[in-house]
Length: 282
Picture 1 (tube, rainbow, N blue to C red):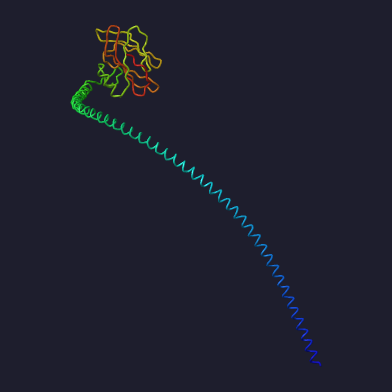
Picture 2: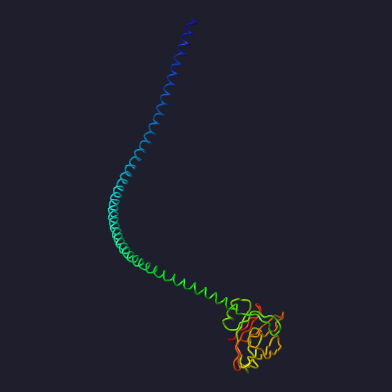
């Protein structure tokens, strides 16, 4: 009796368990079906969106193809125009080159003619140079002669004692010898011509005035004004150095008369280098 009860209880329990499992399986199937439905709806939504994008891409592709076709036609026209321009430009360049070549050819012909003329001139110049060499030889001879004349002039220059008892420098007796002294550069020289009765003549820092000119005896008398003093140089001779000192640090000045005429004498004043510069009276 007890065993039957146990068996029945187990049978009931087995049925309950089987029913419970069936219910759970049914619920699982429902959940799975619901989820699958949701996945299908999402997939359909994405597919619809993809179809829309594909349609948009197709439209854009058609538009792009149309633009490419128009651009291709435009480029074809532009290339055609550019080719024509290139041909025109090339023709113009060739014309310029031909003109330049012709000009260069003419210039070469002209240059060749000028070179021929220059060659002829050079030949003439060579002939002239030969003549110039001969002239130079003659000039050298003249220079040598001039040097000898200068040496002879220097020999003729003399030193004498002046009226102040001082040994004079070289004395010039004429214009040629005076030029020689000037070129030596040892002293300053001022030429003069004085007339009797004339106002004193300024030379360097002194004044000279002719008081008497004795042509017959070659004698003369001068008044010399220096350092606010008047000095009379009386009865001096031709080519005699008339000497006096002047300046803050007294230095020797000399007057030499080379020519005596009626009421007139000519000569020069000699002063040391570095003394005050004055006016040379002809």
